[in-house]
Image (cartoon, rainbow, N blue to C red):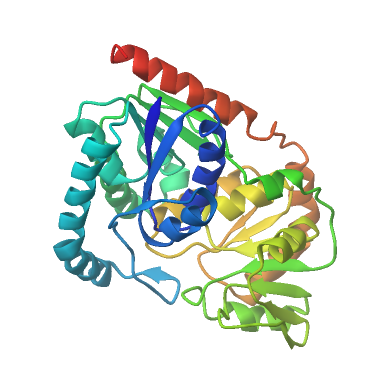
Length: 357
C-alpha cells in the first residue's frame, strides 16, 4: 500500500513522533513524506527523499506568541508557499498515487486527501483541544485563547476518518471517531532508565521567560540548561548553572538522571519527563493555549506545577514539592509505543475498509 504522510514543521515534536510511526509503517508499506520547516530536514536525514512544502509558522518573543507578527509572516509566506504546495499536489497525484493519507497536524496532506477522496487518518496530540471536553478549572482565564485554538485545530485537519490522539492525560472524548493513546516516544527515551540525580534539567528557548536564568541562579540548584544559548559549541558554566550545546545523547542522559525538569509546555518534553517519572515545573508560552493545557493537566495529575511566569516563590514551592510529585509519577506506566502503533494500524485498516479499498 502507498501512504502519503504529512508532517507540520512548527515545533520538532511532530517530526520526532512521526519518525517513530514512519519507521513502523515503512516495514510493510511504501511511504512518501511531505513536511514543512525543520521537520523536512530532520526527516530527510533518516528517510532520504522528503517533499518540502510550505507551512504556517508562529512568531515568538519574551515567552509569548506574537499574533499580529505571526499573521503578517504567514501572509507573506503564502504568496510563494501556496503555489509550491499546489505543484507538489499535482506531482504526488501523478507520480505516487497514494492509497491513504496520514496527517500529523499538516493541512496540505489533509487537503490532498479531501480533493482525491482518499482515506485520511490524523495522528497528533493537538486534536485533544477540540475533540475532548475540558472543565472550567482547566480553562479558567483561558477561554478566549481556547476558543481561538479550537477553531484553528478544527481547520487544520478537517474531515479525517479517524483521529488518533497521543497523550499522557485523558479527558472525556466528546467527538466520534476519536481514540486517545499513550504518547509516542522516540527509541532513545524508551531505552533510557530513569534515576534521580542532583541536577535539574532546564529547557528554555531564547523566546522563553527572560527572568528564569536569574531565578535559577538565586535558587542555588545545579541546573543543566538547553536551548537558551544556541550558538554554544561547549558547556558554559555560570556558578551552578551549566549552559549546554544541544546534543541528543547528552540531553537524553541529562533527562534520564535529572532530579526534576523545568520547561515550557511543549508536549514532547513533558511526555518524556512523565514517562521517565521526572517532576515538572511547566512555564508555558503565553498565548499558546496547547502549552497551557498540557501544563495544567501536569498539575492536575500531581506530576508537577504550572506557572504563568518564573519567580523565587514559584521555584521555591516547586523545590519543596519535588518528593510529592515524584511519588505521584510512580503511578504512571506505559508499554512503550505498542498501544499507539497498533491503534494506528487498526485505524488505517478501518479507514480503507470504509472507503471500499
